Picture 1 (cartoon, rainbow, N blue to C red):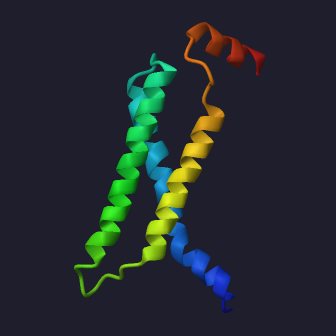
Picture 2 (cartoon, rainbow, N blue to C red; picture 1 turned 135 degrees about the vertical axis):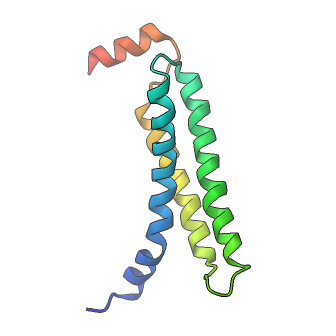
Length: 112
């Protein structure tokens, strides 16, 4: 069964899109499990560091592929990485509390 051109394109870039999101949240969850009592501001800063790590790592890998005869460099993979990081940021900022006050955060949790 052949994929339509759009489906084939999405299958080609999906690994970079998914990896950008997964790396951000896996690294952040490892850090958060080590520091249970952290501030929202600290968590935001760590997320930005995780997003940078994900982006630099995946884009660096794409750039490295330019030096190889066996690997394939794809500019669309780099774009999918950036869109994945943007999606991870959107998800992160939607689900995290909007305040940095601990009492306000506990009140938001109780309201759910």
